[in-house]
Length: 546
Ligand code: TEU
Image 1 (cartoon, rainbow, N blue to C red):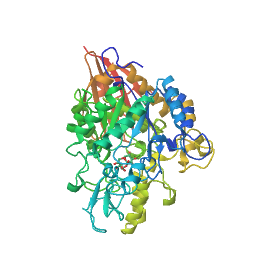
Image 2 (cartoon, helix red, strand yellow):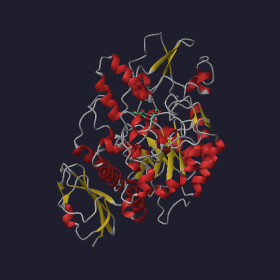
Image 3 (tube, helix red, strand yellow):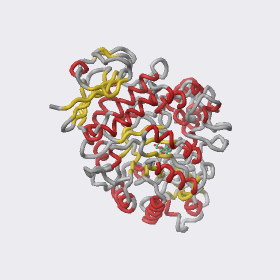
Image 4 (spheres, rainbow, N blue to C red):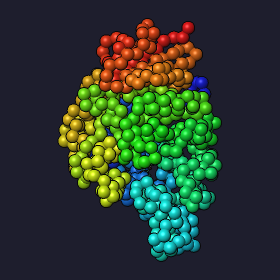
């Protein structure tokens, strides 16, 4: 795999990444949990789809309180997923198919079962004590009122030490102290170790939260953040030809230019989430649903396109393992499921940046509605349910929030075929399969040339064939239109039009008349597109400039 193409561009600017949530992708041994050998058996599927890299959520040794985002040993694979030898084989087998493996690095916190933490809580003079964030105090009087993302206070009392430790996520996920240079060196060493094993890139979990000053209530974008990131990058990533992506819920267009500085001093790109928090009540939690004015979404995406053009690099995504399924969120998972899934894909893949596809998105997989809370598995969902029921919220309302936003929407098993458990496992799946697997599954979609799957395959190919998709400037058309999402991408020679009806009603789009003579590259309805766009219709067209 060449480091740079002829124009000196980074390879990942033309790449499409696929995300695997290992617990739910493919089980090979019948224990109901996905594993590495299962992944290896599906590499041909991924190659056929045409993707360049796979980001895999954490598979390190972990007590699995947060499905692997609580790491107990960064240099071991959890036996549930396989062995280090399996991992080496996965990297090698993927490599043979031109696919790089992107590892997930959780560097903000470890598991409370990590040996560093077990040592740290033995005594204040233990060499590992300062690996974590502590505060002297008295039992029951919290250092301040900071809350943890998964519920409850962000401080946990350790009676033996008469101290609190700080945790932004679960109690079982103590925060690392990045101020301590030993912590940073241990981390760099571990990353280099994975680079030597052939990791092709890294996704960095909640990376905007590593530089914190909990005393001051600062947990995101702390003053030393970019200093730490530049050191991290220099000591590790810059020694290889990697793709790196930082997860930053607190990213703004301004700091995204630092994270994804074209000089390579930090990462290749960031995940920003501004478009993912628009459908919640301002100042409240994601569970507090609010209708989303489409124009807000469109303007938000356009703003990011314009801001990072030639000054940074976007990552493009609708879904991941923490988010509800896009077709249920902003499409129509009933009557127009296929059309709307394709429309959403076209709008995203037409933009500038590196697209990410979350497992099952290429099938138009939908949210799930388990009627009983006991079918849910996610710590965030379960803690919220408990908390809100105790606070007196009405159960139906809480369930509605779960149906709309629970992370388990994304975590039901991959739907491979119409056989029992969707072909995911021969055993009992750790979380139930979405009952719609008999209709929505990979086998059926691969046989059907008009499926969502084939549409994705085509979009991925388009990105390889049309340099304007990687480089072209973005220009939003019809900014005030309440149904149409239309934009152009323009470079020296070419202009491309992406035009989509974001609603289930017909919509008039005069732009399409102006583009009548252009070549249609992709279209989610049969027949010529006309000014009258059908529900969720989407078109990508191209013409030479002149
Ligand atoms: O997510 C970061 C994060 O902030 C999420 O907890 C987010 O707020 C939540 O999912 C929204 O519902 C990362 C990982 O992607 C997530 O799976 C982990 O649970 C979390 O970090 C802690 O490591």
